[in-house]
Amino acid sequence: MKKVLLVSAMASLFVMCKSANETENEGSKQTASTEMATEKTKKVETVFSSQDIRPGNLALTVNGRLFVTMNPLVSPTTKVYELNKNGKNVAYPNDEYATGDNSILKAVIGIRVDSKDNLWLLDMETKQFVVWDTKNEKLVKTIAVPDAVVKPASFLQDFVIDEKHDRVIIADMTQGDLKSAPEPAFIVINTKNGEARRMAQSHPSMMPEMEGGFALNPIAIDPQFNWVYYGALHGKTMYRVPASSFDSDDKLINTIETFGAKSFSDGMAVDGNGTVYVTNVADGEIGISTKEAYQTWAKIPEGQTWPDGLYVGNDGFIYGTVDQLNKTAALNNGKEESVGPYLVIKTDLAK
Image 1: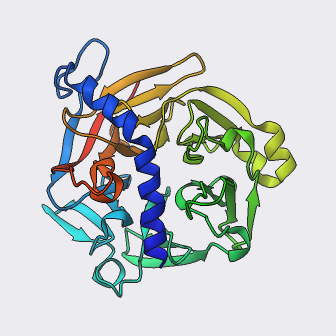
Image 2: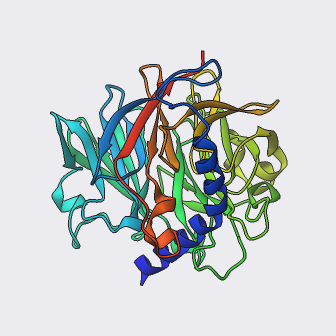
């Protein structure tokens, strides 16, 4: 039943974005191949391509090990992969955790790596974090998302790790039952003792900017753990709040500020210089949000749709997934139009 609810929620989400993607498709016919750099856009390089593995979100370790989650929408046999490990793509951390109906991991979209190269996986179905030591290949711990901070329609998709303040912050979009009005909120969990709070619920900054749209979704934190950036999926405004403000609801709400413009977006990342990148799901690109405006940074390869997750690497590149989720039958009025390959791409960070 949980899987049906998840698929239904995501189907509604992408159907609502369909018209925007149709606009992108028409525009791409008039645009030169995005594999070539232009004066206005950066060159995009494909670092992984597959007909079968359809990366949703991604994370990289300090030395460049690449991990991806498989969106539960596509009912994957394997939920998490390490890509290009010794030239192979393998279930991660192992088959017991990631593969089959009886796997420990059930429905994972959110994925991050901390400064110790521990991999954090947010399981939407079991409502817990699984933290795995990628250096010694062993379980570090699990952290529950308590029922008290979850709504019946919660959608626990993305999160950030705030190592400076010992907490994880989940962007709960809600709207998972296709009936309820959005009740988005931050779910904030102390990584030391597991205490959790639901914060700033239904704050205007989290709400969609179009009728019937979807709320709080992309979220990012800068590498110095000073600012948390976020916005609604169906929103053209980027907001930020000091990471130190999550000590209390009043402090949090009183320090939220408008940062700038963004696109309809599913992913977000911040580099060491404070540059904020977002995926533009309507126009098929990676963009940069500033206080002045939103600007195109790099176009995804021609013929592809739905740039999804973003991750800043330590090698001068920003990485992203491109998964065509809007073209699956479940999300396209029953018509299957997705055609591999599905990609992980990278492009230069802004200087």
